[in-house]
Structure formats: C-alpha cells, structure tokens
Image 1 (cartoon, rainbow, N blue to C red):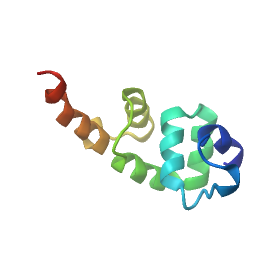
Image 2 (spheres, rainbow, N blue to C red; image 1 turned 90 degrees about the horizontal axis):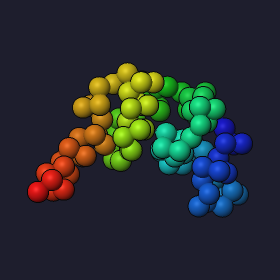
Image 3 (cartoon, rainbow, N blue to C red; image 1 turned 135 degrees about the vertical axis):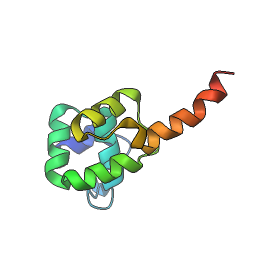
Image 4 (cartoon, rainbow, N blue to C red; image 1 turned 120 degrees about the vertical axis):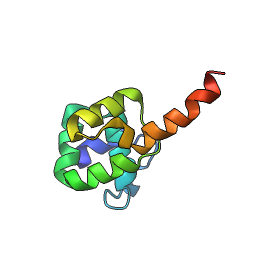
Length: 95
C-alpha cells in the first residue's frame, strides 16, 4: 500500500503517513482518485468489510466514484450517505 500513497496524499508529509490511523482518508482518496491498482492494493490492505463500511458512511463522493462503488461493492446508491446528501442539495440548486 505504501507505494500508492505519495501521489494520493500529496498534501501530507510522507514521514507522517500512518495507514492505520488515516484509513478513512486513504480509502476516500483511493476511491476518488485512485487507479485500478490503487483499488486492488486498498482492498488487500484494509479488507473488503472495512472499505465497504467507509464507503457507506462517506459524506461526499463524485458521481463517478458512486457508480464505481456500486459496481464493485453492490450497494444501491440510495443506501450511501453521500448520495442521500446530494439529494438534499438538489432543491437548493434547482430553484
């Protein structure tokens, strides 16, 4: 996992990266900006259950990330917190 982190965590000093303590941030960055290889490394390192838990409670994801998450993990987009939050914002921008 370490070889994938410097490009994904460009705003963190490499010497301060702690994959266990920063797991939510790392998983979010991989989902939003990672390659297929980054996703594979993330799943190997953290395990499917941990990644899925973070995905379901992540407050923001792009539409592309939501589609990828639904494809890989199988949840309906309506069960994701980020999708629910997007639906609450739609009336504000459509008025």
